[in-house]
Amino acid sequence: MKIGLFVPCYIDAFYPAVGIATLELLERLGQDVTYPQEQTCCGQPMTNAGCVSDSAAAEALFVRLFAGFDAIVMPSGSCAHHVRAHFDAIAQTDAVRHVRANTYELVEFLHDVLKVRDFPWAEFPHTVGLHNSCSTLRALRTASMSELGEPAFSKPMALLSGIRGIRFATPARPDECCGFGGTFSVSEEAVSARMGLDKVRDHRQAGADYIVSADSSCMMHQQGCAERNRVDIRFIHIAEILNGARQ
Image (tube, rainbow, N blue to C red):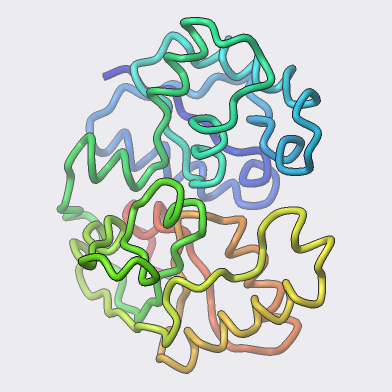
């Protein structure tokens, strides 16, 4: 399978180790991965702000760079959801439809496509709390939603369970929003900050040393809330654990 790796702009700017871990992990699993050097942004920030037409140039570049791949994989649930559900600022050509249909968030690609469960090179001897972003939970459906009362499942937990030494802490409200929400954290700053603080306190009180997530955007927000309020907890992207990070 020929894979195009998309590293979201905010990860490239603030969390490059996440992009590197994603590339290394896919290569460990025997995949043929290419990182198009001209990539920029998928256009999500503009669309989320209501400026849909302003996403057109970013979307067109994305399609030009990634239309030739069998799968497009990215370590971000919100960006994957944007490409699949909201890539509407440009004409819906065959290339656009191909890109939308073959874009995956990393966890769902590992779980559903590669069907990998074992990571023999990885060990993480810490207690972690899993944060499922609203995009991965309610849009990509990588885990069950408590409000639906459906049978429990969790694709990220299925992957993390293959890591030696890892322990899990379950917060009281495991799938409550952390308050990031992109522009929501700007327009509703006080509400967003309190939601983030409640989230990190919930994980810490459950015994978590780390919060792990498939979305660095949520963790960036939570980390800021934790540091400002001196909550002693660390943050790590799931790609880094699966690739063998120990701390």
